[in-house]
Image 1: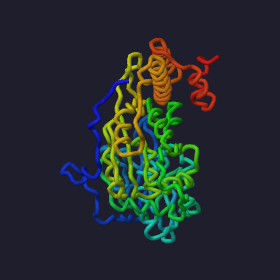
Image 2 (image 1 turned 90 degrees about the horizontal axis):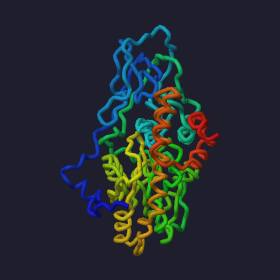
Image 3 (image 1 turned 60 degrees about the vertical axis):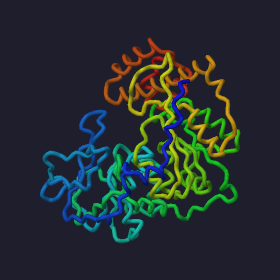
Image 4 (image 1 turned 120 degrees about the horizontal axis):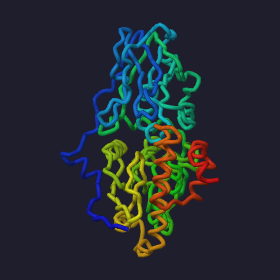
Length: 421
């Protein structure tokens, strides 16, 4: 497995002191109140589009920019060209707009909860309606968070256009890219009544992604198992969030002072559990600036390690969104060793032909699943199957794994059914 330099560690404390740092926003958050505002449900303009059309407009037909969704300088909620008010339902009372609700866990925590601060600071009694717009569908974990806050009875998920007597549009706490407000810490109050598990504070917690991304619907990691095995042998708790209800995830995170894990959605749960942790993160991509900014807000002592491994011979050079990332464990284990979290380690078995063949096949298999899912989202089934044929003609696939995933997901069954007969 390709070895990358070990001097690419990213120390958050040093970064915060540097001139390169984007500072935490600390200006007062604003609650923007609009009378007779019209809200239009979000719609994808074409199949597979990564943005939506709809949102909130003034009674004069002007898009309310503060209600939009900006991600890395891109406006992901585009205004309707000529909003028609004739079919709008009138909703009396006072409402608050929480924005788009995502069915991607990390984006739900960071973006969909980004406008919820007035309800935490002032309570829900000031509002008759709490409005969220589904990006696709509202996931179960989102409904449970809303239930935890006591919002269920007032939650409004519009399916048709609505004109509100009064609609509050709060400033957002996070703009994915490089803006985080210091008040992001208020999210930990949602689960403030969840207690720690006593007596395990000194045990290292490893957030594992071993079972994530195997179906093609999330990002898979290749090579992380070496980190997991070494930490487990050193007494760390191996924590797979998807096996626990969200409340139990928060309880476990609250209970451990030292957390190790990939710089992804798993670490965002710290926004709900609270900070003042020692974080050892790693990534195979450029570290998104919001991670150190969130750590700064939560007062985490954090280090991130650049641990990108190169494509091995036989791995498909295909690019997709949420494509699998190859983790080189050596720089991560080196940092963990120097920090006293593990003892010496031996990675010689990672150079064996059997291991390299196994991870090459795993990489190609999860990449094929991801490629098929993305292609199907934008094209007809016959086009998707042509793309599959072209892929499997060149690269070795673990068809048993594909079959296991297809039996658990109807979309994959549709895509791969004829290949598994």
